[in-house]
Each structure stands twice: as structure tokens, then as C-alpha cells.
Length: 148
Image (cartoon, rainbow, N blue to C red; front, side, top):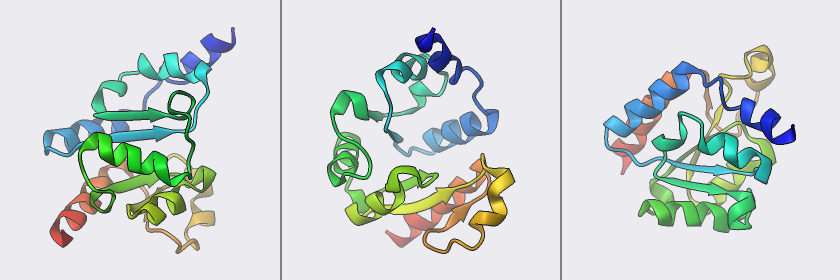
């Protein structure tokens, strides 16, 4: 029952997320995913329609590392065949992930599109740039590419 509950979490993927991921892949970017997750969540994620969008997937329960440990970010960049400073890390900020990615040299932005009811709470947070819609990721990638 626990496994089924965890698997159901991945059945309803926001179509904007899928569209954004596919668009990024079509532009030739590599995608990595780092998740602090339990074994119960792995089966659900691996059967999720977004799983195949990623070139590197590091699930904490499998790699025995967790965010914000520097080495999990470095391992993801290595699997992607890039330097950390060439990476754009996007996350909600849980587990101090954005600071961990930034300390590794990655460019970090805070995704708040799925937390619409809390947006006002984030507008005052200037620690990391905020991104309000999945479609906005393309702009950050273009900015990063133009600076490299």
C-alpha cells in the first residue's frame, strides 16, 4: 500500500513541466535530476513520463549521497560530462539544495511555480533568482549560455 501511494504521486505530471523538459532537450541541453528520495519513491519515478527526459538521475537512496552534499552535485555534473559552473540548478530550495548547488559552482534559481499560494512569501527572498513558470527556464538557459 505504501509503494502504491508513492507511485501515485508521479501519475499526474504537470503538462507544462513535460513541455519545458522536452523543449530543453530539443535545444541540445543535457538534463540531470538530483532527488533526496526513499526507495518507495523510486519505482514511481522510474515509471513516470518525465523520467526519460533526463540524461543523469541521482536518487539519494541509490547513490548514498544527499543534498546539499557537494559530491552529489559534482557526481551529476560528471555524469552529464560538464563542469558544475556550466550547470543551471533549479529547485524549490528544500534541503538547502540551492546553496549546496551554488557552493559547488552551479548557477541556482528557485522554482516557485508549484507553490502559487505561497508566492508572496517568496517575493521578498532575494537569495536566489525566482522563477514563476516552467516556460521561464529557457530564458535562464539562454542567459547562462550567453555568459559562457
